[in-house]
View 1 (spheres, rainbow, N blue to C red):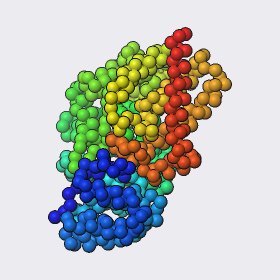
View 2: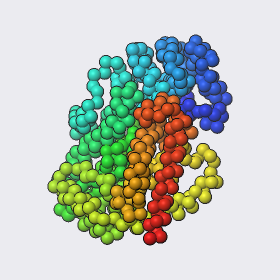
View 3: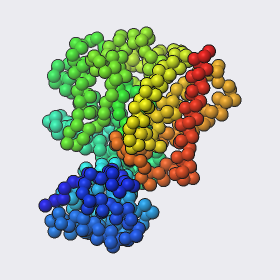
View 4: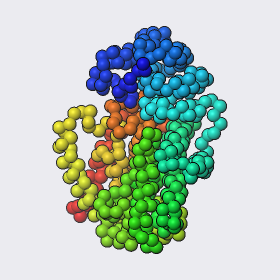
Length: 498
């Protein structure tokens, strides 16, 4: 009988009770892993053996014992061995029912050093590796294919798949498997220090662009089959991180779809719905990307796409100032004559002046809503409040930096030139810190976040940000949020009272 899957936190919990939803025996094993420095290598191997042996076949146990004896000594060479052992526990629990996967791990001892690097980094990356034994190829020392910073690498690999011969379900799963392999390659390159955090962000963006290009080809093929015509007058606009080529491992795709007037509206809507479905439908192999289309003129109401005329009219007459700022971080990601037309429109819209005073009023309205939510949040448990490393939507975080950049770049008359130069250096530094924090958070967690980042992830941040230790990094982030929040408040007060 194979062991049941355990519901374990994604990274090593520091508390002994609250984060476990299993029995006392599991909790006891994890507590011993936390104290691994005291029990040593041999007892740790025995601990793993005892944990699984009563619930697995003798043949499976023999394979696992071989793996423990090979990889646990490697993990013990690291300072944070308890985190590596914890991920090994999760990894074995996830693969022990997959005999083929187990055999492949057992028969590839030369990969154990690199496997240990993955286990020592984060549970999120461990989860990805445990999904597909093909990913073990990426951590082989002689793996020849390395990232070259060029989108053609991703495009070429997608183009090798013959989607025409596959049914819908197989097509979706094949696409997801290929995407997962490429995503894991980026993650492992970062863990193995082959690329920096900035470079990883570029690679994630290249992968997303190549994925959409591939899916567009599939959707075009479906449209030709269903309607016996070619859909050409359409455009896809990317916003946010995808728009600026700064994606993280788990970024959504913020997209707006625009269409022309050559075909029936239903054809365009079906076209874009097919695109969204292929990208975001969950199958046994997961999804490619969450797709967010709420930045379109109708937001979450009405059709999923809009006409060129509606888009133009909305941003000329109805758009909020924050939407005009968001529009500056966009790019057209499709290539056709209609997309060129939309690009010219974006250039025209983005050349227009945005009122400082209107931006200030809108930020204050947002803050009223935030303060109301804050009163509600005071009733929540501490575990539900923002963590020290969360910077995206918190006060003084990434969104506030974007607003500050707007006021400073507009050379507002209320900002002293000397103060402006000094503050801009600080904000640029903090923007880089918050950006890299966001990147690392997304290779440690999915949606729910624990209180602490894994040690290897912290070390990566400290090295790239040239900080002394975790304490100095926390202090920089905390004080940075305060400085940004207070500076923005002063500007808002001045704008409103002028």
